[in-house]
Image (cartoon, rainbow, N blue to C red; front, top):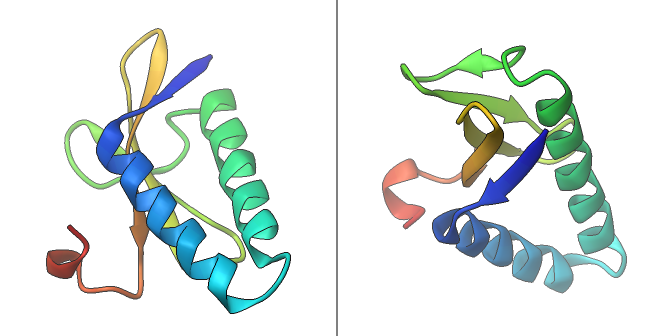
Length: 93
């Protein structure tokens, strides 16, 4: 199955990348690897992860305090957010 990342999710991802680039050399690569692994798991079995609304599901990263927020549009997965789980949701956007 294919996936598409909407612009707000791309902004979330860019913010996380910027943060991890500043933390430690190589950490951003680990973060992006985890993001890619999450997308692979989601595409392989999109309905396996926790529903957070009628349409959306949440896949937790294994190593980082982040989650991918997505929905199954039938022929593709739409990634609508990359959530920092330690940040107040009201301050994320």
